[in-house]
Image (cartoon, rainbow, N blue to C red; front, top):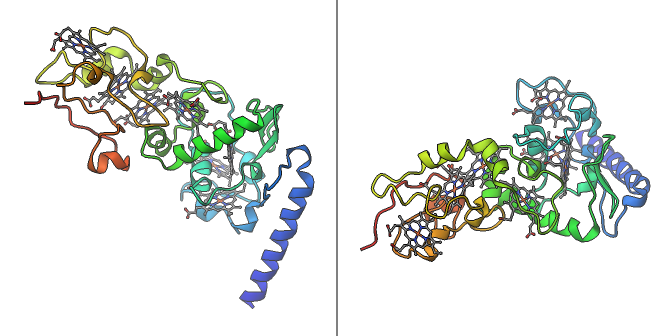
Length: 258
Ligand code: HEC
Ligand code: HEC
Ligand code: HEC
Ligand code: HEC
Ligand code: HEC
Ligand code: HEC
Ligand code: HEC
């Protein structure tokens, strides 16, 4: 009984995915495998938080009927977008972007069912985008730490990111409080003037030290080899910190090397 029901389910899922390929039109790319939600999920409700409203439907429309696409790139966490990407972008288990997105290479990239595109995405940039997504999902870096806190690409990037893009200080400070507040948090007790956020360098880019998609590095140490300053999600972070699984909390102590 259960077996034949399952078979029927798989067959209908196959038919749906074949339709999806046929419908893909200009977004169809070589090797892209279109899959529908129902090929993996019978019901979304059980996947959502207990307090979440009941969901009816078997495709992305089941979500977009209430979650109108939020393509305004405000500096804020986006739990809906973060959860959908995190659970389907696990390395080795990536769902094709085009199950949920529309894409006309070099012209537009959007969310299925949404009127306004997210932006323009070329074929070359799509490859880069996928690499960064894998990093944001599961790396040891700052990007994945933000991912776990529901900060998606658009939390940091003001537009659909491209190779060469970076992020302005104001964007980071929009969530982390002003510079003075930040410097207050990182003032070492023993050597108060060895503060990464308040030094003779004045205002410099956050990204001189904090890399999002690579290991962070304390720039001060290039000149002050004797300072002990640890940066969250840096190369030299040890133990649990390097895994990025914890809150990234680091010791506030900056003691002198003997
Ligand atoms: C190839 C299989 C596959 C397809 C297709 C698929 N999913 Fe998933 N989905 C998964 C897996 C695996 C998880 C993680 C399950 C877990 O953590 O228990 C997941 C998790 C989820 C979650 C829970 C998210 C969270 O962490 O809170 C939701 C909601 C969801 N999927 C919705 C969808 C929607 C909507 C679609 C279609 C647009 C879809 N899925 C298509 C495999 C799939
Ligand atoms: C009937 C309306 C409705 C539908 C349909 C719906 N949602 Fe929601 N969802 C809400 C409301 C209301 C909230 C709470 C307010 C908010 O965060 O937007 C919410 C919140 C969420 C959150 C955030 C929960 C948290 O931890 O803060 C996630 C994730 C989410 N929805 C995912 C989905 C997914 C995925 C689908 C489609 C499978 C979906 N929702 C369909 C109404 C809906
Ligand atoms: C399971 C469905 C799903 C998959 C798979 C998926 N996305 Fe999304 N994506 C969404 C939804 C839904 C939104 C709109 C979120 C919103 O309105 O807040 C979105 C939004 C985005 C955004 C807008 C910015 C942001 O931070 O929210 C980008 C960029 C994006 N997706 C890129 C990708 C790329 C690249 C892939 C493949 C590597 C991918 N997505 C795979 C569902 C998905
Ligand atoms: C915590 C903030 C933050 C988040 C979240 C974030 N980025 Fe970035 N991104 C940056 C910063 C900062 C840079 C500049 C390079 C660096 O320092 O790592 C950057 C650079 C990039 C670049 C250019 C890389 C290069 O080498 O030219 C791309 C592409 C990019 N990000 C895509 C994404 C995508 C896609 C997402 C979501 C999956 C994302 N970013 C999420 C902060 C972020
Ligand atoms: C949309 C809001 C948002 C933006 C924008 C943002 N962050 Fe974050 N950031 C968070 C949240 C939420 C956390 C996790 C909570 C925490 O640790 O404060 C976090 C954590 C961090 C941490 C780890 C803190 C620790 O305790 O170890 C660092 C470092 C950091 N962010 C730096 C940056 C930098 C640099 C940028 C800009 C490139 C940036 N953030 C942009 C929200 C944001
Ligand atoms: C000169 C290198 C450097 C620069 C530039 C820098 N940081 Fe940091 N940042 C560090 C180091 C080192 C730490 C760890 C210090 C500590 O934990 O005491 C840190 C810690 C942090 C933390 C975690 C603070 C906490 O509560 O534990 C945040 C958030 C942060 N930086 C954000 C920023 C932002 C935003 C900017 C740009 C406006 C910036 N940083 C510029 C080196 C730097
Ligand atoms: C390009 C090289 C360079 C960088 C990068 C640099 N400094 Fe300096 N710093 C100097 C020089 C040169 C002096 C003056 C000579 C001295 O006393 O060592 C100095 C002096 C100092 C002093 C007073 C003397 C001491 O050794 O206690 C402090 C404190 C200091 N720097 C902190 C920092 C901090 C914090 C950073 C990172 C935010 C930083 N510096 C980055 C070159 C640099």
